[in-house]
Length: 125
Image (tube, rainbow, N blue to C red; front, side, top):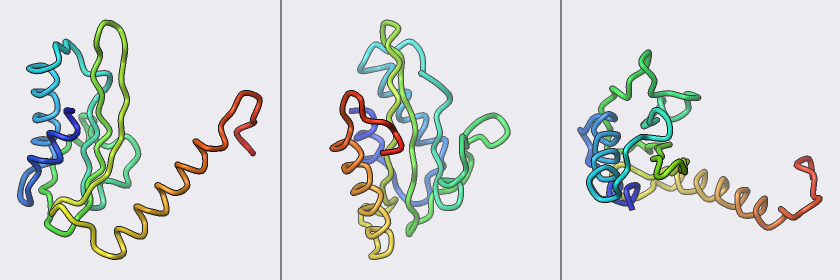
């Protein structure tokens, strides 16, 4: 629910670190979480393509643009279970045509992999 909470609250002009703060607050306040699973990654625009963005050297500090897509990789720890969830969504609430095409291509690849997974199936298949 914390990721959905962030999606509902995000607005153009917010900062990436505000998405992180909203996520962590929601988890702490509503879920009894004591720790984040790892440092939150909240990238928008070009930052969404930076692997492991969001650490001290790149601290989720970009302003969200109206036409951008954000990538959030955030999770919390609960009784030693560490969640790890990544999601992407448009800041303005609706994908532009090119963004939708890319999102749907990645989603399709993801669904095909999940359909193929089975005991004994190699990752190269």
